[in-house]
Image (cartoon, rainbow, N blue to C red; front, side, top):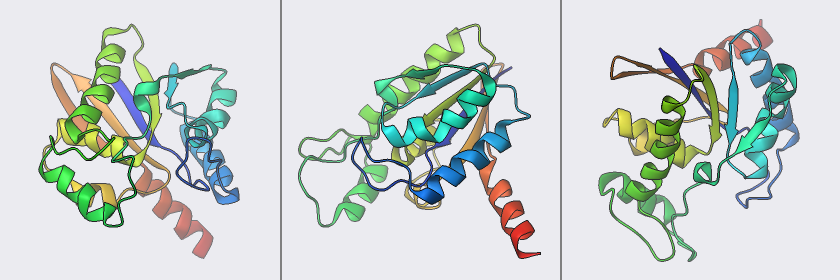
Length: 191
């Protein structure tokens, strides 16, 4: 059985590729490292965006693993033009995977590139891989394996977020792991 942990980056200062983690995001990255401390990870592949790399640096240091950069894990570009109604446009791209706006890529194009990364990981000898990416691209990957995951699934993602994809006998099982961690952490702080 192959396991791929798909991680959405921690809270960041903005959307540009050079945006760093906020102070809260740095703390979240430490929580991620704590979360992964008992989970076997043999390979880390990250989006080249700084916020993604910073999100897994503590895990990389703890596990003594290099962070491999793969441009195909970069966030999806909806459009190169300013879209005041971008949220409605994004929602439309979940309903029509081929819909494309000026300078951007369709949901299908973005989905294809992250699925290519996953397919390559599945062909490798490594059993446990961590991919760190962005919310829209993560949701499209989840949509590829579960057609019910859509716009509302994207809206309900957190920063960070962690899903586990288990591949066995041509079947994929998806499990959201981070919600439990968030709830347990919030409970500990409140009690």
